[in-house]
Length: 228
Image (tube, rainbow, N blue to C red):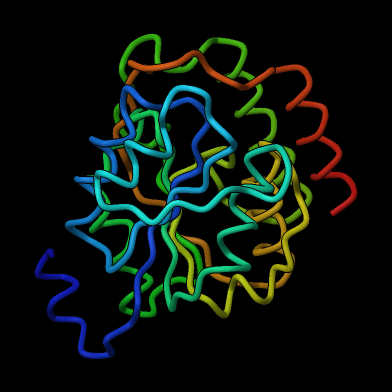
């Protein structure tokens, strides 16, 4: 385990949550790297049909199955069932680098932020890792969030985040799908919680195809911004 965790005098229990759906080609790599920085890795599987859950268990993760469909449901399942002082979320497709987890966790461990977001737009993105449509949508959502809620957010849709238990309890998340990150961001801003963005790297998918339907997810994200 990394020195950051070894030297944590508060002995806070740090849990990594990885939502998965048919990520057998990459989930083992993500788990093994993440285990260096946390006390426990939880894979929340959406009933994959490619052996993802078995591979995750063999790699040293605790596997639970989500209570329904969607990424938001997966994250809420883990947050409701698994105790942690600090949670870090990362996708199972290896587009985010688990070896950057220390810099995501550090501001939470040191009580400098209530939620830390890994910003792809501040960092380095591999060419083709985000489609032009998704990049435009992200920038639009960032603009709306910053305008309505007086934020300074550059990547409201990032799935690489860390937050403490107090923040989780205050947010009372309800989202079922990909709008979960938007809900986290908006509710933090509305409640005056401190969000810190850290530049991260982002690469193209090497495993299964994306589950994101841009238009369907986009409409739900827009509703979340308007009605949160």
